[in-house]
Every structure is written in structure tokens, then in C-alpha cells.
Amino acid sequence: MLKRVLVLVWICLVGFILSTYAQSADTVFTFPFHMDSRLIVFEGEMNGMPANFAFDTGAALGLAGNDFVDSKQVKIKGKRMTIRDSNDQTKRVKTGYTAEMKVGGFTVSNVKSLITEMPYLACQDFYLLGSNVIKLLNWQLDFDRMEISVSKEPFEVSPDDISLPVSYSSNRPFTTLKFGGLKFENILIDTGFAGILEVDNSSDLIINYLEKKEKLGLTHANIGLSTGAISQQIVESALLKVDSLELGTGVFVSIPTGFEPTKSSKLGIAFFRSLSHKTIINNSESAYHLLPRESYRFKAPFFLSLQYQNSKVIVSGKSLEEDYIYSQIELGEEILSINGIPTANFTEECDFVRWYFTYDADDMTIETSSGKTLKISRTPIN
Image (cartoon, rainbow, N blue to C red; front, top):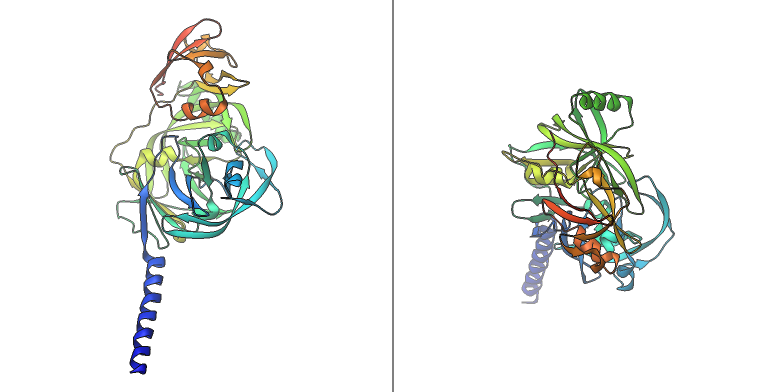
């Protein structure tokens, strides 16, 4: 009798072990995400407490503000690190660890983070989920259902998918693309970049390419604020549509592309959202897969940029083209009201940040400190 009981216990124990292994290896967890603030954001847990994760493949490590330290979701521990942001600026910051981080039903232990205040994150209570966690799992982003799925096993790929191989450096994914007879390697796949495609404009080949496009009247010059993890700076750039972009096994046409001084040419989340129904990130196979849309369009750009500085809302970017409206706007000029609402209502930077990064209308009416009332609209590009 005792032998039979021991056999039954052994069978149950083996069954439990196999069940646990099957769940950890094959289980897929699916949950909603939103892009109200331009990036992919979803809910997870840090040390048993809810946290809003902003999904950023372009960040080698996660990034947390001081509120996450105060709530004990991150414990400061270890040496400071020197980080370099997208503006090529450096700073030494504290580092910390989260004992347990939960994504879907998966738990990652002892997750390292950088500790620094970035208004976009701090004002919206976001934790920047970096590639040190993202690369450990496989992901499927469904932009039609606004759902994200995560698994330890790679996701099944459709024959209709466009596939692009990636390589990794500091856990971050890089790929190769071609356009205009030029080949570009080490293009960062950066879901923490809200734009479409940004290319460094410093090489002679790119300068010649842009000069040819400018003579045809196909470029749109502008100046705007570039925001990195630790810095902001004003940069001039040119925007144009790339006729034919070769990426992996696919060819995409009329892709709006920005050209500016940058150390990291990159594909942003707007590229994947606009061009694919689903994007699969099979990190365990070093490949991304896009289920392409039958037709697609990109929202026309808004060349007016605003910034909160010294308790004022000021112009931080504008079109440099010959344009009657933009010719009346000066960089650094104070804005007194937006759509009839006084900017004095923004009593602190976070009030402005929460409004600005969720603003998605096609136009904006501003009143400037010089007494002008101007309606600014999105600008279609050739």
C-alpha cells in the first residue's frame, strides 16, 4: 500500500514539474497596450507593485526616476555609470536593481536600471523598459487589436511576413537597409523613438543625396528640439520621402525620413505601427517579422514644437521653409495661449508634459507674446 502511495506521489510530482516546464517554455501571455503618449505603454509589476512600462528596444538598460526609488520598486545599489544619450551627451548617473520584475506571467529577477529624471517618464509615471529585459523574451505587437503578447518561445511567422535579420550590441537590435543606391548598416531598431526613420546626415554620400533632392524641391527644412535621456538640444534637419526603401525581404515606398546630425540612425515605432498589422520580435532567433498592411499612410508632420522652460511655454521648433505662417513665429518666442486656453494654466512642467505628449489633433491655434494669433496645421510633404 505504501509503495503504491509513493508511486502516486511520484507521478503527481513529475506531472507538476512537467506542467511547470511546459508553462514556462510554451505559455503565451497577451495583454493590452496603448500609445496615448506616442510610445508603447503597458502595465507590469516591479517588486509586486503595478508599474507602467514604456517599451524601448533602443535603451540598453531600463531607466527609472526617483519616484521608483521612493516606492522601493528600485533599490539604489552599485556604482554610478556614465551614459550617453541620443544627443551624444554623457552624464554619470546612479544605478539600481529591482528584485522581481513581472511582464505578463513571466518574472525577471535582479533587473538593473539607470536612475535619472527624464520629464517624459517622470511626469507620466513611466518606467522605461530597456533591452536588458526585452531581449530575454519574444514579443508580438498587434497594432490592430492594440495587444502585446510575450513568450519564451519564438512566435510563428506567416509566409506573408517581411523578415529582417538583426544583430545585437549591448542587447540593442540593429539592422541594415538600403535606399537611393546607398546601403546603411547598424540601423538601430528603436521603439523608444516615436518617429519613423532618422538617418545621420554627416557623410558626403548623404550630403550629395540631399542636395539632389533639394534641387528637385523634395526636401522640407526644419529646426526642432531633440530630446534624449539626459539632454535636449536644437537641431536642424531635412525631411523627405524616400522613394524605395529596402529592408530585409521587403521593399517600402514613400517613407518619410528625417536627416539630421545623429550618432544613431534609427527606425522608430511609427514605422512599425504604420506599415504592419503585427510586428513579431523573435529575439531568440535574432529576427523581426512584419505582417505588412495592404495600404498605409503616414500622418503629415507637425513642424511646430513647443517646450516648457522657466514657467513659460516657448517655441522650440518650426519649419524653415518659405511659409507665411511660420515666418511670423520666432524660435524661443513665448506662447500665451493654445486653442484659447492660457498657457499660464500649466502651473508646472508636468502639467505641460502630460498635455503635450498626448496632443494628437491636426492643427493648433496659438497666441504669441507679440500679439499674433496663428493657426498651425500639419504640413503634407511631397
